[in-house]
Length: 529
Image (cartoon, rainbow, N blue to C red; front, side):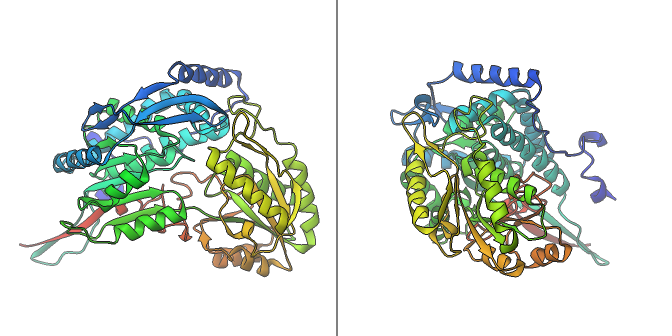
């Protein structure tokens, strides 16, 4: 009975509010639009400020800075964040090691309380955080709002998951023998978070480690460090002891490698590119002097995600799903649709409608709510994406888009290529921008075969009204998150646990019921009575 009730009970047996995902903001309401504009004003009031490292609660300012810019106004400085050196990374490691000895013994209920309090603080400052994402990451209002909502979801969900797991799992005992199965923390974790979900993923990976009793060094993406600093401030306000989370932005080559290699590092939680993820995994596999464990790597490494359209499909739904999934946040989601496979019978109709819908999209400064799409993250991304557009012009038929402008910000227009070979570069390589390739299949089975013809396996979607084809896809479409009759983006914490197969990562499921176990180890004790 205790295990059945634990997910509903908290302190003193009072019932908790059951988990439900944070609702998205309705911007058709004037009060919400005004609140977002007020959030932008708040953010603008602290643009250009400098931010220190936080190590053991101590603020440390360094001469060397990481400067964060607004990708929509590339000369606008969001903030300058102190940059950690190897010496400061070592200091943070020692601090995390010291604090771990006490934090691991703090009751899980107390650790969960920190998350619940942090969620409440962020909820009250929701429009400010979303506005910061608009300025720092170039996120349009809806995308920023979803990012902030997901951060809240991770806090609420992982807090409750910890309460459910705090007493271990039941195992069998025998007469004269009492057995227990308990979870204990791993140790020190390195959190390397991405820029595309600079709040949600950064917060989720950090608190998953913290609520399970670990201490961490947080190294956020260099393009979006300010929102990470603001989040650490929230954790402090929520009562997180100094040294549990240490804020150490820095270069991957100098600080990232050093921390991954460090003998005291117990696990690395990484979200980013395939190549960097593989490099981290390789380095983590090597035994360093003084290291007495095999390091655990939790990695989400990207995707090349396909929407399959069957001949028995709602074609308007198909076109809408493709456009939204391909061009939401300028295609800068690891779940974004970058490949479309359409059964030949409806190919021309769907391609034509995708073209029409794409050409209605509004593009501009994300601070303007009327813009569906904004920028890509920086000059390097802009250059890479525009190079792929030129490749696409050689590999397929340009349906729409194909232009870009980086004079003010890094704007790439939504681009659609049709009649592309399934083995072409734009159908195989992760572009991470608003570029989608479309190819034709003879039948549904071939469409699924083409969809599987990639080294990634993160998300996918199937649009069909044929039940047998849905069931075929359920078994044969090899992705971690498969969606029927909707787009392939927009997983919700606790509803669609997120993570994929093959080169998309280590098969972990963020926002799922077993994710926290990746940050703990199980201990069996057996007592003879």
